[in-house]
Image (cartoon, rainbow, N blue to C red):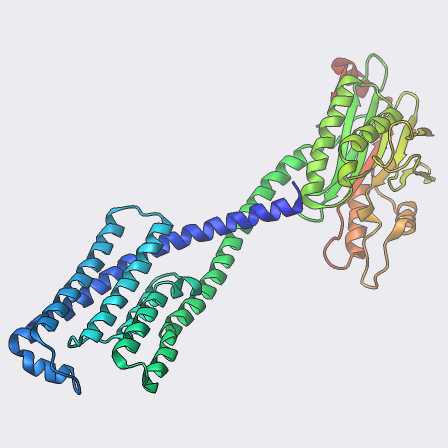
Length: 491
């Protein structure tokens, strides 16, 4: 998946989640708005009806100062329109409550409710109905709707502009074309939407920021849980340490993040009769870090399992060649390359055969303290095709008491407080001078890396030790070896 596609998917998930929350919020808030408008409209209508019955003349004088006293038909028409407006708000409330309207339908119904209320208020004001607030009533209703509904600023403008246009036309028609105050009112009439639009802008911005925080917190928690599961699966691909017998295997692994691109594979050919057997080890370092590198490791694990299942006695040069071919054909097009060290410890021949594809040199420390480097013998895996790649395997003596220490570049590229690398030379001095028991080199090297490193790790770190016991030829180990026989993957 490309980064743009992944980003698009993530954006789509965010948008869908935000729209789902907005739809749920719109439904609840619309019911409240319609309910409030119904109650207010009913109270106003009852008050108007009572005022008409008690004393239409007194009400008209108090409610229409400076205007002509409205006729009976205008009061009746005002009461009828007010009742229709109240009943329409109640109908909108019942519709939204009983039917599961879609978001767009509910949004349109909210526009119609606010626009219809505004149209009726404008019409009543121009009919001279007592208590009609006209454009002021439009402002109040629109502001109330914006305070309730999760509209965006653009959505807040939709129900009010038709009302303003109708009011402006009626204002000019009834107020006189030549009067300056009439045109002054028309000029400033669009500003009745300003308070509501401002409310929507501030609340919409705040709600979006809060939703982003909640969304990312939830997604971060999900990713953390997934990474914990992924790390458990990733580390299950590593072999189990070999703590006893003629040959020992131990390692220390510290990924830069939850999971990484360093990997150790081991396959043991169990001895028969009086033979001591062989141990094949593959150390890999995938370019990059994190999830993408770990996914590549998973693929390489499958390929290595296939290779050793089909050829249990395969030699390091052939393993390196097959890995190079696989990486070149399947991963190189994605700019994924791998450094790899393949070795085979043959205890009967007292040798290690190895092939190194661009990996940092391993160190073989002999029982007498002599230090040998297993330098690179080939290019980085995947950089060249099968015909150009030459693994050039080599052999080196490996007797009882010897230890081979391999590692990935996180061990030599860590930086100290002064910015200096630990470097290959620094690691060489450490291994040459230090003393430790068999199986203790990974912990010792990792401790030195932690002591040198300033700040968090910037790369995955894997340190491996393959060592021979001084009791290689013991009868106990040979008897146990004869009883097992065959070959196995060290897990």
